[in-house]
Amino acid sequence: MSIVYKSINQIEGPLIFLKNNHKVVNGEFIRIKLESGEERNGKVIKITEEFIIIQVFQGTDGLALNNSEIEFFGESFSIPISKDMLGKTFNSLGKPIKIGTKETIKTEIIPITKKNINSGQINPFARDFPTEVIQTGISAIDGLNTLIRGQKLPIFTGQGIPHNRLIAQIVSQAKVLTGEPFLIIFCGIGIILDDAMFFMKKFLESGNIHNIINFINLADDPTMERLIIPRVALTTAEYFAYEEDMHVLVIMSDITSYCEALREISLAKGEIPSRKGYPGYLYSDLASIYERTGKIKDKKGTITQVPIISMPNDDITHPIPDTTGYITEGQIVLSRVMNKKGIYPPIDVLSSLSRLMKDTIGKEQTREDHSDVANQLYASYSEYIDVKSLQSIIGEESLTEDQKAILKFGDSFETKFINQNFNENRTFYDTLNTAWEIISILPRRSLIRINPKFIEKFYIG
Image (cartoon, rainbow, N blue to C red; front, side):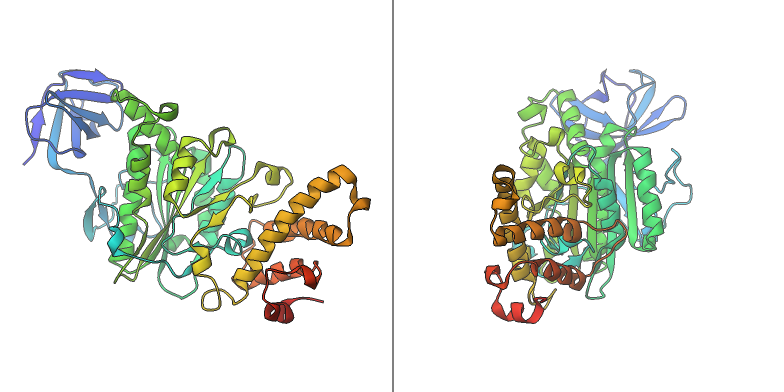
């Protein structure tokens, strides 16, 4: 049975305050009906002895203290879920939409079930260790920072770096190698319309659209919806992973927009700010999103998460990337220097890592030489950076032959291994074979990170 309020005590920005006259549920979903017949949605975000504070999704413009009905339903927000969602695009509330218009599609999906978007994180005792890979077709990720099913692997980027192209390429190319059912969920948080149109176009061109579900929140959509859409996307992922036994990859762009919305709502509620104005509970709030990722014992499906983090002023110590780094299992860092060199994707391999990679790659998953090759590439590229600095001081003529080989290796590593075409989809074997072409520039005696049996088998020349 619903409860209806017919007067508002106070309106402050996107918030309305009601006198607390009944037992209300924190996070409860409410409906607001104006005299004109217009309906808006809201969510209970704070309860005090005196007031119920509600965030109105569509804003409070046009609301007056006595011209609306506020209806409480006694339950948190739930979304309908169905296999009909495959290949379709939805807004923050789970309503089918067509990008380029503000209208929802009138023909809605026929739900199999409804799920509360505020489900808890995975119990650590129920977690199983991720042991299988996802192939992205991108050598700098597959070869050096392998993505594992059930992993949280964020991408740290900056303004002007082509992370949208990288996202589109991952969505278009990502696959599991075992032939099991695989689903990609793309969650756009506060993105501009041009970016949304770009993603939709690239996903359609990939021929993989029937394996993609899109949730889109545009930059001019209500701020509150940015706090809902990641949970809507993850709730959908949980259904397909744990009830339909699918492997689900969730890509969310951009978590920075989510955190800015969180800060805006926190300040509107009058909460005491912490670092750079973000609420003190930023860590726990982000953990409530990230920790809904993983592999559960006795479940066939998995959820893998790749959140995109735009670093303000390229500052990796900013609260958002800094906090994210504590929760997730590694990071992919995009480099402005590499981007200026014209290298795509501009991944800074020495700042990137995948913490779950070392226990998963190898003969059963990728190839027997993968771990040794990755270690050698890291070591030799690090040496290349040092020799490059030395060259700028003493000149190339003063370098030893081994140092000159390192310079040749480093240039080839950047232009042939890291750099690849936007539409180039490399298998693990392609990636490792390319790596051996570059490693073979170095003399055999310098390959101290690779087992001699692999040198005998794969070294060229």
